[in-house]
Length: 236
Image 1 (tube, one colour):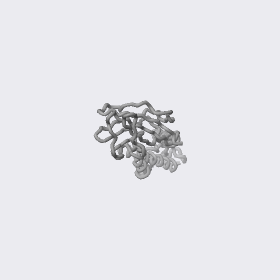
Image 2 (tube, rainbow, N blue to C red; image 1 turned 90 degrees about the vertical axis):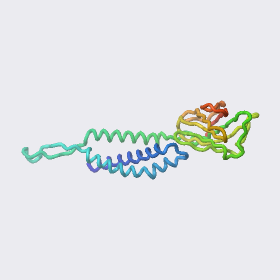
Image 3 (tube, rainbow, N blue to C red; image 1 turned 120 degrees about the horizontal axis):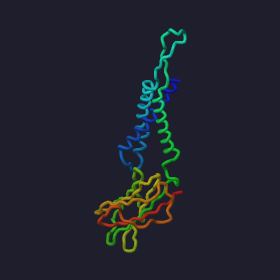
Image 4 (cartoon, rainbow, N blue to C red; image 1 turned 30 degrees about the vertical axis):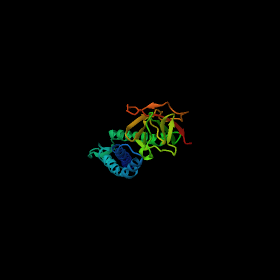
């Protein structure tokens, strides 16, 4: 029984160390463009925390998991008491809490799933420049980033990205959304124009939108009042 309990303690320590070190690396690294940091942290750095956690779990079990108690010897009533071991109640509670936390994390990541119910969805955004403002000549001069949860990605410009709405120039771009989150935003940077940012008002797990949202200006005032609207479509 001691071997089994010690192994379980080491296994829980390995899981906690693996997940904890990976989460710490992701937190310290900050926003990730394409998820590469999170993947590297979990598969490349996480195992180091798993080994450390396994050793720490066994050590903690040996050091705190067993409590020595004195019991009378079975041979005679006058024999000195023999030490016996029992499982420490505080240690058992701690193990229970760790199991509960890891179970919740597993449910959140693998059963609930952080990915959208519709799978990858396409966000189409259009920007309308003020009257008299011209579009850049080069596609490379247009920088559009879409924030989703704690990461961000560069929006794609289609071949017909140069557009117009009456006498006002416009830009068309698309990006993929995949995560359940309420934190979404899009930013636009053009030459000689400060970066402007718009929040994307969608539910955490959105359905496709029937059409484009109303035009809106950036969340912070800017000299060039560029307007943006968007729509969301399901890829499947």
